Length: 167
Image (cartoon, rainbow, N blue to C red; front, side, top):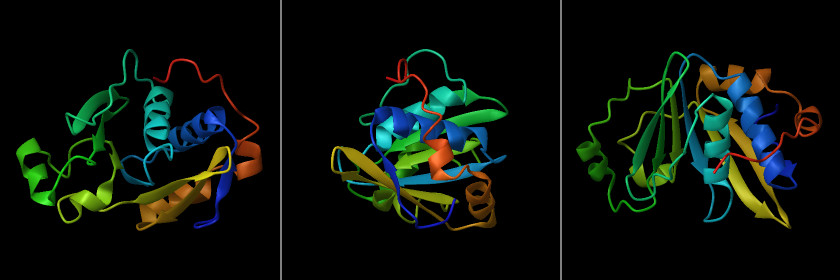
């Protein structure tokens, strides 16, 4: 997939398909910063990716807890939602180690700038008509290799799974 090139996600099922594609090509360790306004689909993408990585049971929103940790193959996934923090220094109280976890999914990462591990991959989501648009940028070699391995958007979005069970 080409960095910066937006793909159209026509509905929630398309977002879930994108999350599945990201999960299938997950590197050994990755930090993903999820960007977008309220309602852009960041939480939907994060939940669907966690589900695709085998998380069973409830996938809770970290809106109030700031971080939720889930066991996945070969480690843990951390899902952070930093919308409610006022200062990046507040992350210190969470006791997070940048080397923790195989996967970091960070919503509202700009609010934690300087206190987060650097992003391998930036996913930008925005409302586009009745659907969403997603674009990607990589900051590291890990992120660039991950993007290269993703299916092309046309193929990716023809593999739309059942959307049940991601909430």
